[in-house]
Amino acid sequence: MITDLRLLLGPGRAHILTGYVAWTVLFGVLSGLASALLVPVVADLASGQRADLLPLAVVTVVAAVVRYVQTTRGSAAALETMSSMHQRLGDHVVSLPLGWFDSDRTGRLTRVATDGTVMITGIFAHLLSPLVISVAAPVTAAVALFWYDWRIGLVAALSMPVLALAFRFAAQTLARGEARNHAADVEAGARVIEFARSQRVLRAFGRAVHGYQPLEQAIEQQRRIRRRTLGQGVVGLSVGGLTVQLAVTVLMLVLVWLTLAGSIAPAAAVALIALVFRFAGPLADVSEYAGAIRIAGGDLRRLTDVLRQPAMPQPRASAPLDQPGRIELDNVTFGYRPDTPVLRSVSLTVPPGSVTALVGPSGSGKTTVIRLISRFWDTRQGAVRVGGADVRDLRTEDLTSQLAVVSQDVYLFDDTMAANIRLGRPDATDADLAEAARLAGVDEIVARLPDGWHTRVGEGGTALSGGERQRVSIARALLKRAPIVLLDEATAALDPENERYVQRSIRQLAQHSTVLLIAHRLGNVVDADQIVVLDDGRVVETGTHQSLVAADGPYAKLWRAMANGRGWRLNAPQ
Image (tube, rainbow, N blue to C red):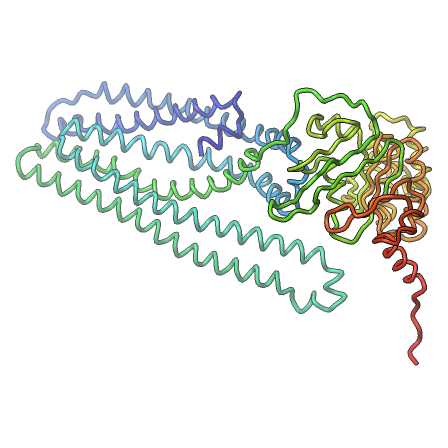
């Protein structure tokens, strides 16, 4: 846990945690030492002698000062860790490969980032300090027992490994249960979100009222796991508590035996009883603290696991872009899993200023090509070049400055229409913004919005239709004026009116940018300078529409299938 907290703080601020732990250990030692110094005081008072209270008073005062410093250091360390947590996460997240951000990881990141503040506060306020003190004080008391009588000290020393094993068993039992609880909670939460998002489909088929089986199964699994975890937790805590009681019993028996044998004076024995309980008392809490620490440590580890994800390798300086607008894939083989290639020895070149279309059946690798060019992932074999430079030799900001990506799934921020389009080029003038909006057909949308350009579009653009969101995305690309525009099925789900606007925008983009587009509607690519046909991760044909139709290969078959489909119609039943 200390390692994870130091990672959250970062190398420049890790000393804050080290200082806090050191002050906590010092307070625990002084607490144990104060208990040890109480032994001669009690022994003298029990025998009727005058007790020397000065050493005990000095240690008590010093312990009070140390406690104050330790508490303030703990508050400072907690605040510093919480403030640096989101900064460290944010700084690291922007360095991760874009392919890392799938829905599962994003959901987990959301949970650990939002729960992290409460978790870190709990560690510093209720867990770390009591646990360290509950260990440091008994260890000091055990050393003092050696000082007063080596036989009692030996029994205390021998009991500590047994206690450590019992505490470890209790902590691991609780931690395993909490890991299962966390997985069940994540699954149930995901199913609840899925249930909420799919209300239209579920209601259309009458399933919203009668229950959603995946959600019900997840909740039932969550209930079973929590019951199982509760039972195992009781066993773990019971083992830890019984072991502490056993250690106290053995120590008391040895102390009584030594007193009856005359090795220890009765007055001293009374004082040593207090020291034995000072040794065992905090240890009774260690089992509970250790289990809670393991649980919090699991949450903390899930947080720091994000920081341990390897960042996208970045060169110190980008390679020169001596061929702006050029795209090249050179013998690229890639798969999201090593044993399942998606692209196989793919080589293609997109000349600057040209329009190239990627076509082929679903699963042929078209979107993967776009992702590799955008460096969502790095290819394991071959090279992907943009502007004449390998994308691995370009810094992220230099690569993204060359690209404008328009995907089928458009995300708009909960901001104004103008702000969402300016994402393409924040410093664009109002005239540039208006021109990009006109070309993409966004001006027609803005004209009927209640507050025009200042209308907020809602999270994800919920105030707009899918086609309207697509037009906004095209306007972003037009405003950015990047050398290369990548369109991933930008017209696949558009109505005729929105498709007309998008097609007009693509022609405008082609006037000053290299355009690489994925299209399922072959009628949209007949005018492309180059059509690349992919099938099963391989380039099977390349050429213009006319040459590919004349070749009577895979593209011609796709074209004929589309042409035949246009003649389909629904007839009334006879």
